[in-house]
Image 1 (cartoon, rainbow, N blue to C red):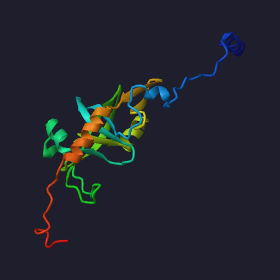
Image 2: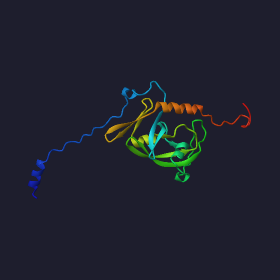
Image 3: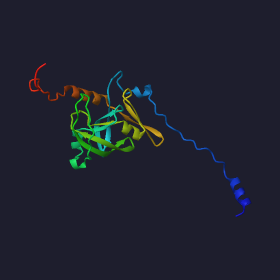
Image 4: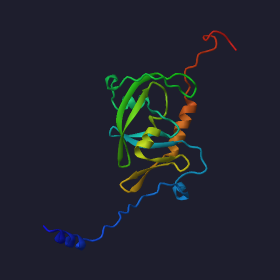
Length: 194
């Protein structure tokens, strides 16, 4: 093929146009507050599909770096000790006590149409929540969460999907924590009084 013919064929081609992508902007507005009770101080509690099951009472905690699974979910998913990976770093609860760890397990978590693998630390501690998802989960999804707006926004296929929190479930969890009376050592058995 001659150079002249190639140039002629190239001249008949349409000019290349720059590719434009429409990017959805993840933001929250007053419109997002419409179905929430305002003002509030509720945590963000959602329902997620974990290992194929709809799991209610999952706390979204963007302030934490650890994803946690509590005993009720561990038992409910029929997990066995041999399913766990050894995990040794200490975990300290809000009251400053060391939490007993059973191990770690990697499970698929579906949020809207997106699925990511999450490393849950399985703990032996009380919580009205079934699990906590944290920054690693949010970052894997490139998601943004808001307790004020009670939503998680997840980019997916050029659009923004929303996971809506349940304020009534968050309130029930709070009441359960307040009513939960852990076993307390009496001052006499602890070796003295005040």
